[in-house]
Image (cartoon, rainbow, N blue to C red; front, side, top):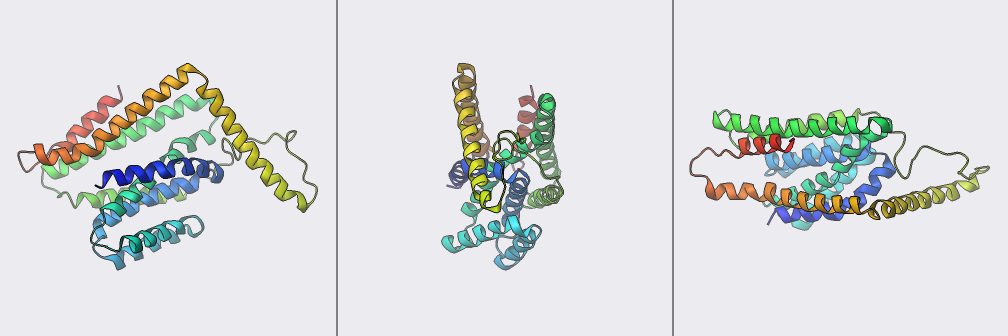
Length: 277
């Protein structure tokens, strides 16, 4: 079973990724997400040739040596543990789950670059861009298959190129100077004075304690409100249902399709378009 692997990988890494995202101020995790998806499509295309795949991943990691070599280490460890390059479905799903959990950085990076009064506008732009991308992906994929321009395997090349472009774009994103918890806008009156080098460790400990204290206060404040609690529960249930349908509907298409051309691409496009309303 491949899909549960991606779910487990995403859930296990989600909490860690959330805290690390705030600590490193978004951009490295956005790069991590784009690189994870690039590796997913690289595995689907070049997975039968381990040497060429390692060369590609090593090149991608060299684009940002300091923060991305962990990807190459994870990939190598998974290959050693799995010990079977011919069965890559679980490896693909692990990287897909890691990329999905890192999506929180993509969703929240913009809030560190704009004033609070613009949050509603940038949220709508963010969601609209994501939905348009999914809609166009379904339309282009369906058109390529229906008109016999590309086969299903060759569609992976389009995804690989798009994720590679996203990775290159992420490398040139401006760095965020602040984050919600570990790097908030400084209030100099509340920070301890640093007179000598001996106080540096104390200041670091202060920032960590302050970040976790702020996170806990936000958690209590948010979930002590019945409206927020009900909204969160319904959102979690809706997302769980959507993920179940989106993941397993592809398997169902194999059983209900009566001809060579399947129309799951156009169905997904219509579903994405309707979700806007």
